[in-house]
Length: 167
Image 1 (cartoon, rainbow, N blue to C red):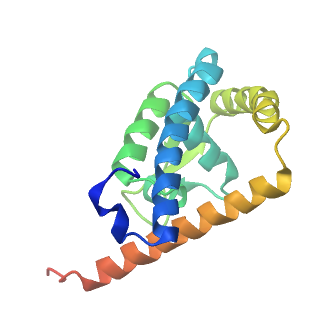
Image 2 (cartoon, rainbow, N blue to C red):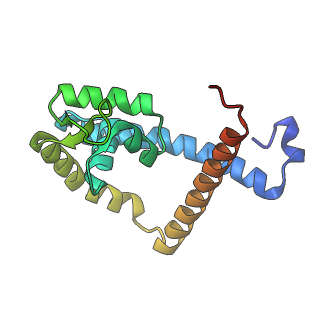
């Protein structure tokens, strides 16, 4: 990124954020490949595992739109994954008393078994990834990432407020 013409216009923080974004993109690619390998034997992919994790961590059954919002993903992508894992018996879609067409996504016994098995493999994997790293530095990095996410959400909400409303 340093060789780009507009880099002189960036503030030092902006340049650092740009470099961080590139590192996150690279890390995300590696995490997906490694995660896919880790959970493939359970009929999962990283994306399926992530959706099951969102379902498992939710205190109540949620519709796809809310799961997607909680995960920071678009509804259509989560809907596709939920459809796949429902077809394979990892989740089921139950009636929602609050909304006729927005079914509630509920993990089945098969889904719970696969998710728990994946999490058992995840523990030694994350321990290996964190080996010799300072936990306080990791926590600080997490706070920076969380702040960037919140800023993006605020700017997205502000942009949505500025859009003309069609009736």
